[in-house]
Length: 141
Ligand SMILES: [Zn+2]
Image 1 (spheres, rainbow, N blue to C red):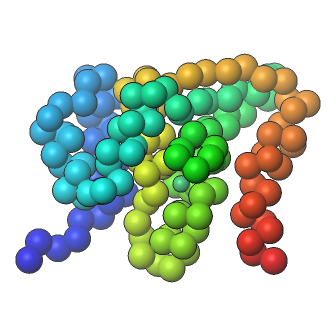
Image 2 (image 1 turned 45 degrees about the vertical axis):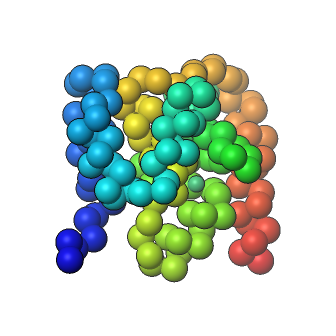
């Protein structure tokens, strides 16, 4: 039996290649599908539909990544590989160490440069983050 590969490491490695090539090859798709299995098609679908958006706040230069998934919009934090969806919450918090397909989509979309960008005033930062973190904090209570 093949040992379970580290999802994080594989995703980072492929993303690094994509930053140079800006093209997802069949071989890379195969590598990713071995690791992410059923999570890869929805992730690729999100990228295809341009459902990854980078909100760039001015003048602070803060960035917020939002991924529109099948059941709603989620905030993804690539630095900490965190996502506000239920899938992430239950899998990653249970130490199953599985990344949700929103994170997979965000990482690949960013590397490929296939995402929407939107500039937004800093004054709306609190409102935007509150919107996407609301259901996370309500579940923890
Ligand atoms: Zn997610």
